[in-house]
Image 1 (cartoon, one colour):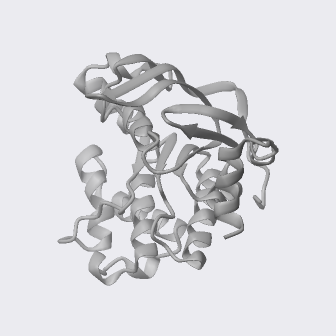
Image 2 (image 1 turned 90 degrees about the vertical axis):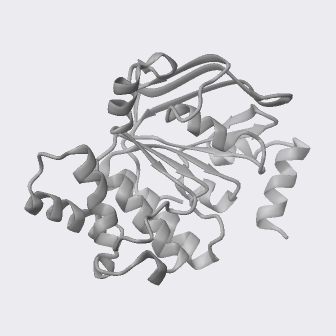
Amino acid sequence: MKPFTPEIDFDNTVISIRGLFKSFGDNHVLRGVDLDVHKGENVVVLGRSGTGKSVLIKIIAGLLKPDAGSVNVLGLEVEHLDTQSLRELRMKVGFCFQNGALYDSMTVGENLNFPLVRNQPRLKAAQRAKLVDTVLDAVGLSQTIDQMPSELSGGQRKRIGIARTLILRPDIMLYDEPTAGLDPITCTEINNLINEVQRRFKTSSIIITHDLTCAKVTGDNIAVMKEGQFIRQGSFDTVFATGDDLIKEFYDYNFIQ
């Protein structure tokens, strides 16, 4: 469990989703999703592959448009934003892709510097360098600044991906399967880092995962998705205190087999 008590403001909702639907042809991915994320809260969206988890956060980030429903992020209705307003909102919403999404032709330092040059061109080189040093220290990889992504392990690439997202100091972090493909020790490191980001940078987060250990360690609130709908929400202990066969099977697969 978490080594600290997060500072959650339950009177301040930073993401509010109501009646969200999304289909791709005959594939009905989201079927009426409701979800709230409060300031300072880590919400885990838990479910098997193909249940619509990643589609949900792509809609929150404005990468996909919903077919119906509303998505309010930091007081703005995402689906109604023009291109410039959406770009400005994305500065406040960090998206951590599964593979880290690093540029292979750039060093770690250049990868981290890139979003600053692109989005905050008025910053001086010394200011950018300080921000790069800060986020590298936060993820515990200061020594990698001159390395190429190909020289990093999978876990290090995930950490640098998180650092590159953090460098713009977003209010919200969206993590897409942060522990996928990692060994158990590296998974523990990533889970601890997600908690450290929440504590140190006061972020609110949605964490997409099918990893129950990740959910248990990082989540303040758990929302279990099945076939495009949330079937149970609450604390980890509350969610799994049920005789529901699907939830029980999910728990058994992660913690017994």
